[in-house]
Length: 111
Image 1 (tube, rainbow, N blue to C red):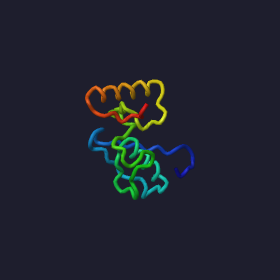
Image 2: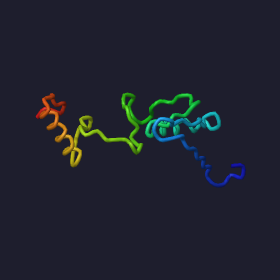
Image 3: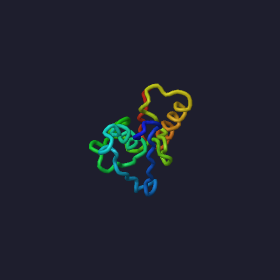
Image 4: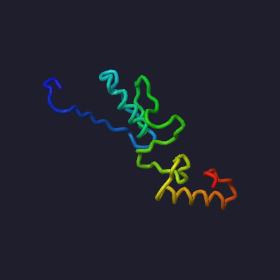
């Protein structure tokens, strides 16, 4: 860094990928790392100890999972998508048919 050439690459590993996903925050050293750490927390679920404002950045607050993790499973209903199409529409219709067959009231748009 002192010579001013090349990117700085810092690699850290968590203990495992399921429940011990904590790393120390770099914000005390580089304040500009705040948004990158928030993005990593939001998408991958890695908790940065010592971060001043660790909350979701891209996903909404009620979203439970972390969509970039390998163990993430996409929902099959996609009712939040206003204009479902292609394979998303096929999965949404299959989900609605499954709900109707099980006796539950479907939450899809009325036709």
